[in-house]
Length: 273
Image 1 (tube, rainbow, N blue to C red):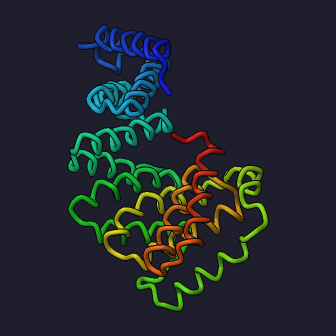
Image 2 (tube, helix red, strand yellow; image 1 turned 180 degrees about the horizontal axis):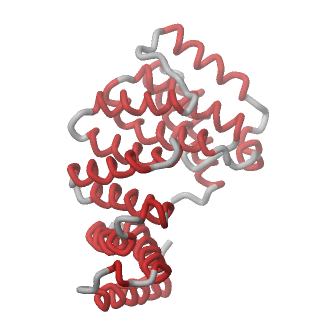
């Protein structure tokens, strides 16, 4: 939640960084001390990420350009984390700006330079969302490939047996006080499981349009991860979509309603709007 005071502080921060950027316009970044370049790149990264939080894609892209300019050609070797996050911010800002070619350009930069599979996941998630506007089926297939690499495999086609098994697996998580369990269970910290939840959350809208059978498998898997490894804000989507599947596919209205109420419990726990 942005208060007037915090908004004023953000505006002052943006103004200060903009002034530093303008002061360096026309200056060869290679002539600057490495520590100064890294500091300026880091400040522009923070400004870009904050602008994205405020849905200001134009400001974010401006700060990304300055940040990458200060990072320079040696950015991937000298300030790897800053460079990675700048390109991630570029992917996301260009996605918000409806510029798929630019998303692809920065995505390829990350794929070519990222040191680990985990460092590529966020960019992959953004690329899936970007490509879905023209190829939903391709976006879903890409998501399942990444989920498989994260240890979460799914059948290409969900059979009636797969669906019944998914529903049956949920029975082990029934308890007398599910709200207390959600509120008191640990928060999800496993990086791969967390990214699995995020990725499954991303593809819910596409599955709703393309495959309701896979939708119930995905939502059931999200709940299984949440109950076994810990909860995250994305767990709420799992509860909601599982509830939706029970009601719309199987007409299990009362059972679906119970699961839907638990989505609200997750939102309450994480103070989500």
